[in-house]
Length: 169
Image 1 (tube, one colour):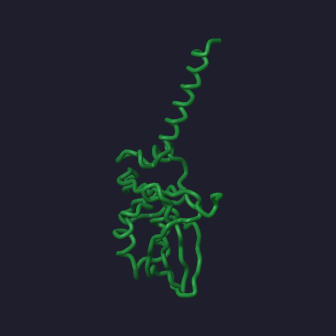
Image 2 (cartoon, one colour):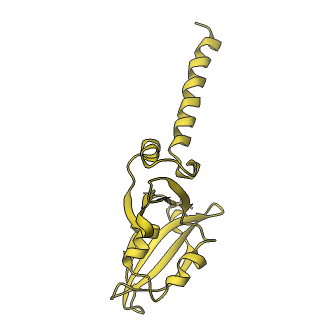
Image 3 (cartoon, helix red, strand yellow):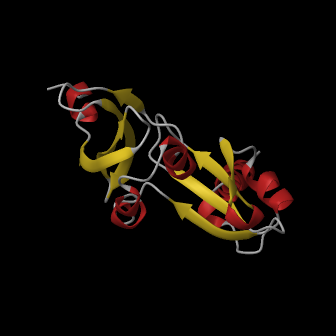
């Protein structure tokens, strides 16, 4: 067997692997894709939610270790109308800010899925939900403050220093 005849099958396998990885990427779904085709391409969502107007949200989260939460919104007929990678710093003011004081835990879960961690601090009477994301390839954190009544009171972002703490000096 020659070297070139061994490279051919290896190249085909590598190409197939790359294409398979692209097929499972929610942001590559075309508008109008059916629910069945979406599930066939992406697999089982990490969560599903009912949307107004009999729509449905299929949520594909790479959390807690990952940096993305992709929401695939379907219309009442079961076809894709929107795909949004929610952990995008450019969207937080439009998404979270209008909900401060009115958004509840269910609204946060429907948008961002389960958090990376839930913590408490002495200066706030409630829980702080945290998600990891990347902004221009820099690890970041989104903190959403939810009071003891389950209402969002504020949010902010910060640097994720975990990788720096784990890196050897």
